[in-house]
Length: 127
Figure (cartoon, rainbow, N blue to C red):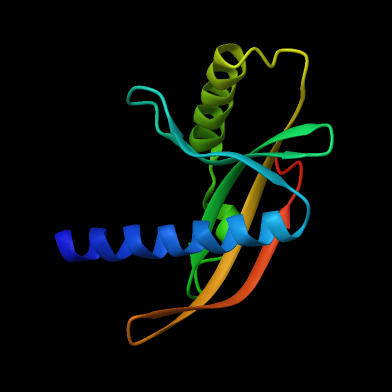
């Protein structure tokens, strides 16, 4: 069980790194990764695209057997991200900013211990 958690963490980190790279190549400015506040959870990536502050949830999957990665971002997770975004906005005095909630879907293949990116889909205004 502990080994599975470690593998999920590595896969999640590889997925997030792929998304950061994608965002930077597409004109986003990365503000912060893995923003946490207490035990409320975390926002994977906070970035700026033009006039928007984007709060981006990254979901990685090796198969579409259980649906698209974005389908795993349920109501509770969305509400947590929104609460955390409010805290971030207040702390950084960004109240006058346009904000957006995006989901980055990462489809990958694992070959031995290698993470191979197959597809990356950014869903702007996902919720």
